[in-house]
Image 1 (cartoon, rainbow, N blue to C red):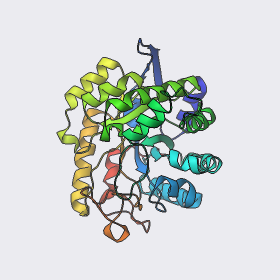
Image 2 (cartoon, rainbow, N blue to C red):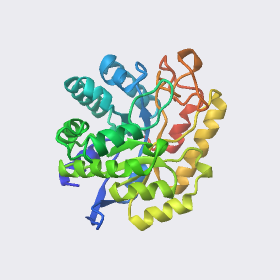
Image 3 (cartoon, one colour):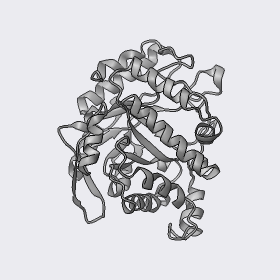
Length: 343
């Protein structure tokens, strides 16, 4: 992590100083927090209100003014908010590479204007209704392993997407960390490991200086699979009081890498019940001294982020903190009790 990057991050609301450890035998660089800086991450996953899928959000219905308004509401209601996790879409890139790259840059400019740093998530393996889009084991078996020759084929389908992102933003101070994939093990495990390793190595070869992680379930078993190519250990500790924190913390200490909750706070249509869930999660994170990105900032047509009038719902019900009309959801200012006030 170079000096320019450190100054850039410290210029945002959150100052995340990191120490890059010597390269390990497995090729990964250990990234450890300095003065518990990673524990100060406070923010949200964000899906704009105007789309259901990655293609709609980043191409078909992209609206930078709406993104600006909704992230601005986040900073208004939650002054201690300092980070936002953005779900990118290789499907959108393939549809229109130039438009996708321009729209991603536009969102990063909005983040900068609101004093937020971003955690872009490159791929997704959580599938619901409506389906956001993303990868599957069938896709990785064919496009990476077989037809893609383990990523070495000249026409490896994901290489242009990775090059477009990593080359343009390798030392971008608006990016706190990269998340290679959201929940890759939802429909298989080993098939994804070499693909994720290759993606990590591609990022490093293209000069990426920010820490890199992979968002997985809050279990040591999942972390063991991704740790060799993770600089920060990204977990989804839903129902945090039930998570095995002793084992997670021991593993993190053993590897010399920080933990970061990149999703948390299970949903409910009942506002009071949802606030209870949020507060229970946040209290655990405070005790465990880890940063968190709640799911999710704003009501959206994306699955699990809306009430029934905007589409079908699952057992996760409703996970937004701000309603579609821009009003704060009842009781959800509880976030402010666990977030230091921002600038």
